[in-house]
Length: 131
Image (cartoon, rainbow, N blue to C red; front, side, top):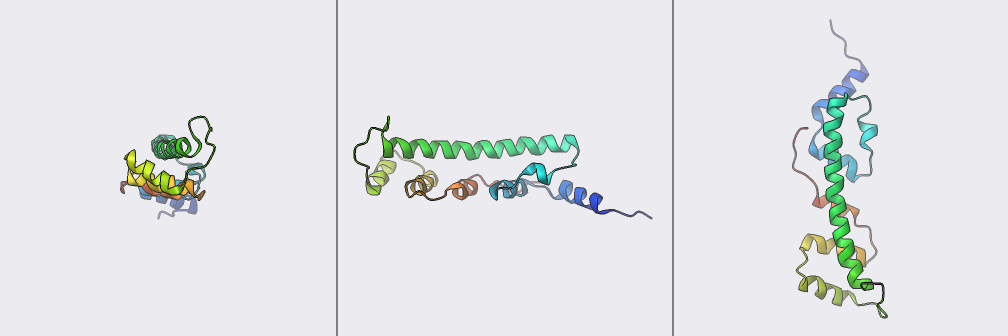
C-alpha cells in the first residue's frame, strides 16, 4: 500500500498543474514565485524562473515605453513645461504618434495618476501552456 503525505501532494500539484497562466496569475496579483515553488527540484525551478524573468521583462518594456511617452509629453524633454498640457492635447499627441491602443490605455492611466499595473499584466497574459 502506498500512502501519499501532504507534502508529496503539494509538490505533485505544483509540478503537474503549473502553467504559463498560473505563473502569470501569481505575478499579476503581487505574489512571489519563490514562496510558491519552495522545495521544488532545481531543474524544474530553473525553467519556471526563466519564464518569470520573461514575464517581468515584458511588463517592464510596456511600463517603460508608456512612461517615456507620457513623461516626455507631459513634462517636456527636460521638465521645462511652463503650463501643463491638457488631456485632450495628450490624446491628440498619442494619435499623431500612432501609439498602439493598448499602450494608450496605460498612458491615460498614468495621466490620471491611477494604478496601471493591472493593465500591463493583462497585456502580457500568456496563452495557457503547461510548463
